[in-house]
Length: 437
Ligand code: ATP
Image (tube, rainbow, N blue to C red; front, side, top):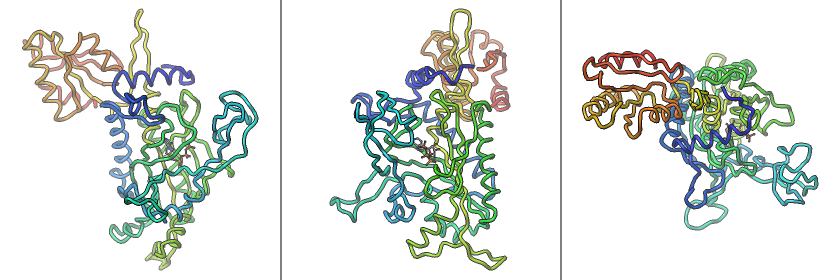
């Protein structure tokens, strides 16, 4: 396994992502747009697999969480009520020597990370929300924001959910979607970008049970990452100090990953108290209290919010999976992704691409397997190169069709991690792979 704390490893991962079609710089042919990235054929599969794993664990495998998908554009009053118009700000300072701008809270020892200068301008606040406007005339009435978090879409639908699914506390809403922040400190590849995807749960509880469910969700979410293959030594919990808390939070624990650039937040679990429902009740004039029909009382539930980033998780999964194995004088690069996350599950090759019978049989096998697993057929290089490609994108199983396959109807299946090869009957491939995957 590689050493996570080596900053060269980020370069290796960025290079692999580009070389193998995971992630590209956005608008690259025009010189790129800073801090925006495009996901290629394998990157989108990885992201979809992360989302699927999350949705399965928080929606399908539970009885108390409902999925939803709110619009990105919302009524501007939402952001007044939520406090984002006034408080979603970073304090910025400019270095007087090199003129670069930084977030005050990210400066170490009050020293400029670029030129080591110590003389800064007075801090100024900067709102992180991207503004745009609806309609052809731009005026104060037409201003809308690109949402900086998906959460508010769930709070403003609280009544709709109560009226349609009639849930009992505790219950939750789950949503995956894009969020946008005009970040000043960016960089570190897809760790901090202007546009990113969040996976958020808003879990509504009785106020007196908030602490219990806060601890519960910190554990649940921590274990989700471990269950998908993140090594324990690379994951930790970090509780926020009082001065660090967001304007809406009573308590917050970050799940941090040991990235090549240091321990950094992967997901935050916050106790948002009844702040949001109370605020939206006041601003909208609608009663957003929950009615408890057993005790016959109305109250604002507290909200526990596990809020993770899909792009950040993708980077953590890629980093944790990246491995270099020395074989004689060569280095084998392999992504040891959890099988649920691997973009491609099975690759099928003919040993000789100029033998039409092998090609036909290999194509037929791939086509049959496509009905059950994400499978690709490849004959565009020699077999050694084909294996290498699949190792680099983390494909758990490669199948080779050779001359003997035409006689005995068996193929060689090679396991990414053990490199063991087994001869398997073509007719048993589906069962064999189903069991393995
Ligand atoms: P940070 O302190 O790193 O700016 P945050 O505490 O502001 O993050 P939250 O508001 O808690 O982040 O957002 C929840 C999650 O959304 C984060 O844990 C992260 O995974 C993701 N996220 C937030 N901002 C970005 C961003 N600019 N780029 C990519 N992912 C992000």
